[in-house]
Image (cartoon, rainbow, N blue to C red; front, side, top):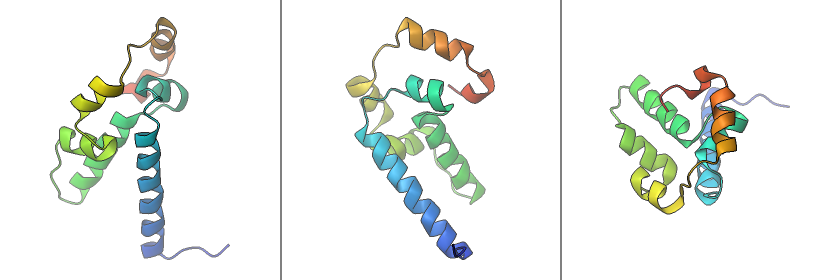
Amino acid sequence: MTNPTPPSTTELEAAAFRRLVQHLRERTDVQNIDLMNLAGFCRNCLSRWYREGAAEQGLTLTDPEAREIVYGMPYKDWQAKYQKEATPAQKEAFAEADKTAHKAH
């Protein structure tokens, strides 16, 4: 395998990010709590990381702005349209998971 050059690496990472965001936008049936329980991150984590990356570049991005980039719509709209009440089993799994992975949720 040929190692990509730094600009190519950034372009590849950006392409993977865009595909992940598109996939999460399409999979509205997958709830954030399921992502947290299975993978230790969710759409909100992804939007926070995006906002933090913007800050590292000297750009100001609010939480609602970053969430809209990830969700493809305002977060409140996504919640009203797609978010379901967590089941007792989901809540129990979340409570038992490593709390450090759940910061800012």
